[in-house]
Image 1 (cartoon, rainbow, N blue to C red):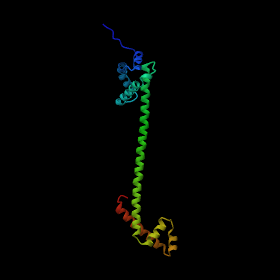
Image 2: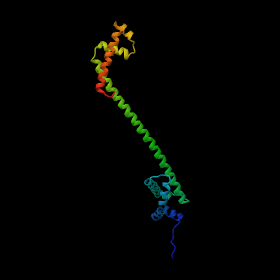
Image 3: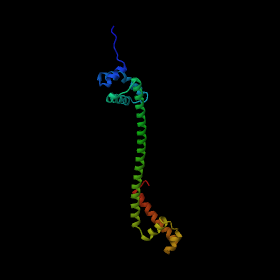
Image 4: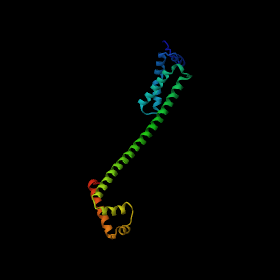
Length: 186
């Protein structure tokens, strides 16, 4: 029987450097499948493994004239391992960025929702207050917004403390009714 002559890696590399596409095809068919399986020991997605190995072979072909490889098998294994680790790092960065982006979107969305709710509520309060008795509103604002005590309000307006209490209670009652009507879940 005739012996099949299989060229060794050094011979194929020499021919590859000269642009021999047959030498490239021989290297590809010799190593592609085992490199994909090796890559799969790092990365579980078989499609991604095939892409990584294919990209390596494309790079080898594109830089064939400058290749300085003494042991082709070792070079291919190191290159695949390096590319797998790069892909894993890239995935981690992408995943952490995606998580941060989602978190940021949630925060920004919540902040926007809160701002819209606050703006609507403020308009509602302002409209309600503008429809009430001016003296009651002034008493309410002095108490709730300026932090003035009931007795001090009574003295400054020449009215009784009880009148201050009643007017503030009436304004609060009106505000609650209006807010409840427009925001039943609050």
